[in-house]
Amino acid sequence: MADDVRALADALQLQHFSLMAFSSGMPYALACAVAMPERLQAVAIIGGLGRLDVPGVTDGMQVERQIIYALATRSPRVGALWMRLIGRAATRAPERVVRQQMRYLASVDQDVLRRNGGIALRAADLQEAFLQGAAAAADEAALHVSDWGFALADVGPEVYLWNGALDWSHPIAMVEHHVRELPRVRSVVVPDVGALGYMECLPAILADMLPGPGSPIRTVGSD
Image (tube, rainbow, N blue to C red; front, side, top):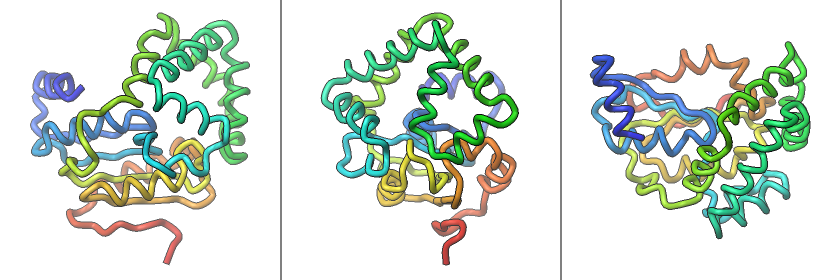
């Protein structure tokens, strides 16, 4: 991934640039930070899904999701199979998949999807994602629960973490682990916001993700 991003940046003549990743995009952005720290101005992780084999990091997720992740960490094939099943269902009945996934979301996230045709948009997004099959998504699911090739402690640039306090998919226990392990980190946790809260907070995130160096870890709404 880092080699591909470097080649793209070279082609676009970008000597310095910033990266933003969502959920399971976290390891890819951090891999770039490890490989080319001198070129990254900022690294932002929105609702980052970190390693799932660390004890306690899935605390706060729904039990069904915890079980799936626990099985996947023992056998990456389970994660790949799970993604293939989602892909097949999304191809046949994407809106039904969205409504099933809503069971794993806090009520504030369900409200986000219900506003402005969000369910239909999410269904179209899922259908497009699996238009050419689920093989690539299955590979990525297996990669996520395999060895990343680096540790969080290897990440040199400062990492900006943004999370909703009501995000059941990326719970506070996972955020706390990232804060402990990343050498340089700013953590923003927004009250009363869930996994999809970034959709309505994105302007503020973009304005905040390029702070001055050495900014302290902070939590919005805390003392």
